[in-house]
Length: 154
Image 1 (cartoon, rainbow, N blue to C red):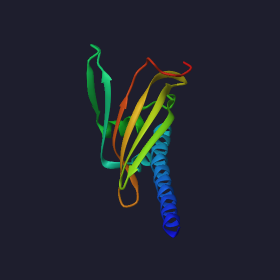
Image 2: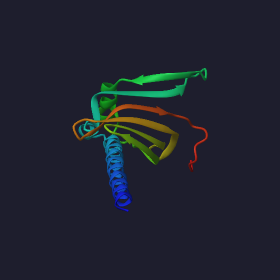
Image 3: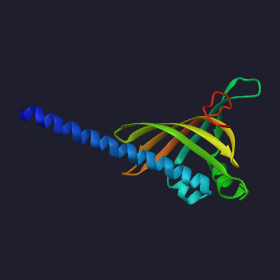
Image 4: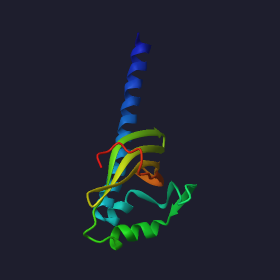
């Protein structure tokens, strides 16, 4: 009986620890988008490693699959200074699936992107995060973008 009780207690603590880490990862992603929406590059940078990689999996004009790399320094410049104040970019996260194993995490988020209140596109983000001395950091982000097969009111 004591063995069963001990096993159940360990299972409860392990599940609680996983929930805490999952929430920490989700908070990093929410902070990333808070910085993105506000144009706050200082806040945005707190969520990313110095060597973060951004890519997009999409189709080119000939409908061939391509992988497009985003230069992070250009991304930061666009977010912080090149975007006109009158432009509103809003990425609405629709769902999260987060997996954590030790100091590595993956977050799969479905999203819709709205530009000045008008639907632009939808897709999925896949975030890879690393826990660097008790701070989750985004080390890799790849997304898809499409205008079709989006479950949204356009």
